[in-house]
Length: 180
Image (cartoon, rainbow, N blue to C red; front, side):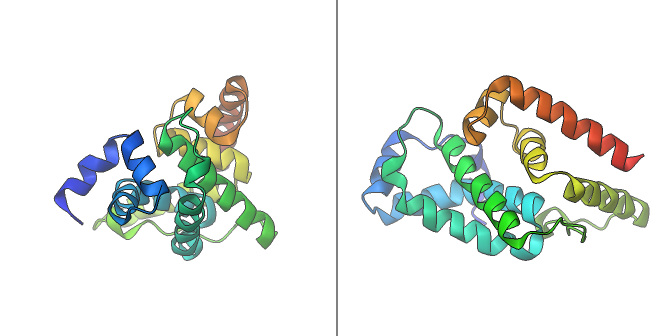
């Protein structure tokens, strides 16, 4: 990973970069990928599990790069990208037609030499998150993992802001219940 990668990931993708990428500028496409891929991958891990996250992350970029001309600029680029990523994950889960009960493994980049107790606690949280309805999991993940505002989540999922709040509260209640 390049040293500037992490800093870039915190910045919003600017309009000139999106414009350049939309006409096939390879450097702009790479800049977008490098700035956002870690967060999209983490979203996919939380939504579909580590076993499918790589493939779906790549699908998100193939799809988003082919649809760049459809980005209107009404929202942040990342919000538009998260919408595509969330939709891709939800479609995958629908296609698979199964509730995920298998464990989600922590991303290798965040794995430390944790104690067994911490591993067990983290495993319980991952299993509880995997047991949530996929749409509640999406809202919870976008808020807690990606730090999106209610407004950004609403734009990402194309739902009213009030619905984001109520579903986020429902997701938190269900997680607490699953963890107790």
